[in-house]
Amino acid sequence: QAYVPSPLCAPVRACLAAGKEYDFAGVMENLPNKWPLTQTTFYKLLRDQGGYHTMSVGKDDLYQNDAKFHAFPGSTYPPVSWDLGFSDMKRSASKTRCLKEVANYDLFRRHLENTFVTTSENKTFWGKAIYEDCFHGKMDQGSQCIAETFIDTLYPDDFVRDEALEILKAKPEDKPWYLQVNFPGPHPPIFVTSEMASSVHKRKWPDPADSVIAQHWSCPEYGGNPEFGGRCNYGAELERLDNLMKSIVDQVTLEDTMVCITGDHGEMLGDHNLGGKKVPWQPSISVPLLCMGAGIQVGKTYGDPVTTLDLPGTFMEVAGVEKAEKMTTQSLVPALTTPSQPLTRQTVHSGLDEWRAVIRSINGVSWKLVCCIGKCQSAPTGTPEPSKGWSLLLYDTEADPDDMISLHWENPNIVATLRQDLPRGWCPNTNGVTAKPPPLSASTGAPQQKVPITAEQKEAA
Image 1 (cartoon, helix red, strand yellow):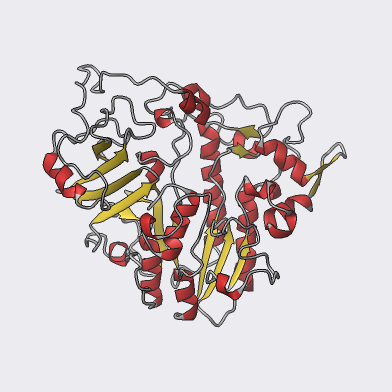
Image 2 (spheres, helix red, strand yellow):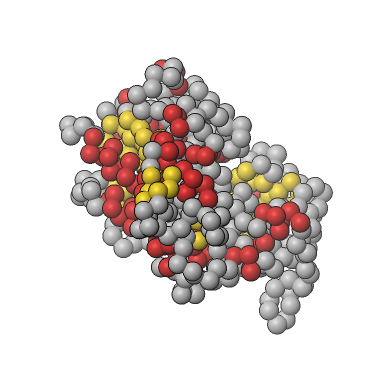
């Protein structure tokens, strides 16, 4: 029951940096990525008000469409006004952007270009060429992406872990510190080393929900080489991250350190015939959120909806730093220290492009109200047609984690309550918004009507 303020890389990271909801953080899409240069960040507040040594490694997505913004270690390129608030940084691009940016301004790209791998047959391969073949799924005969060449040091998440360990060692010993580790995975394209592929290939992985393209997400027969695609290999990416994060956490003392682990968005993995994210369905907007360390209850779960937007507010409270004006981030400290204590925030928001969603616990039920302009993208099978230009849908997120049955028609009072929390102008007409859903099948409990898969959905998958 943890949700992101927006299920897309740059917008959600802008929300966290600014401590503001999606509609107010200033970054509405990945491209163009227009981070407002005058906007303060909670990193700045931790550094300048709290005296913290603030650090970032990996893919933070606050780059103004400029690979040099802010900044390559040792570079004098960015003006002082472009200060994001980091005392030290080892920033790198995404799995994709590292192939587009020039080596001089991306650490991982430079690493690939400076790495050579020699096989047992005494053949030498260039790191960048190996990575490119793996990235594009070129793993057939003649490929440079083979078991002996695509080694751990060329895997992007391993690179970020190594950078995190280096920056931790270099931090001053006489100051409190904050470190944000931004792993580029798990994220499409899904490609893994042969060791990672072998760790998952004999295990059973669930099929996509409500999908006629499940075969696209099945895993290839393991042949001893790196692999591309498949839900099992996404699982391999997750398990690799578990180990990488543990190796970082093992370097700190949890008695005086707070550690939180989360994702910037989810992943559909074929659910509702869709890959990627960007939609209001549970696999896209809900993410893991685990915190541990100083003052945090061990082995406890907080069951009501929360937002990752409140992580900055949590860190600022722990650091004794006041929020900047217009920041709406709040603190999760009460839930972390006393899980039975309710939080001040009652409603969680998420949104992107042509939809907004609010999530709230009412009488012990976690309800999600989704408002879309027209028909929601990749709507689950049987979703009612829009009415008067809007779709207004209601889901019980715990009883129906696949968003299969909208309960808006049966719960008008819940709809009316949650609708007040939508941003101004969204789903303005409460009467007749979204048609009555079709009857349910007596055998399956699913809506009887079927929605054919579109060419766009096939291409996305």
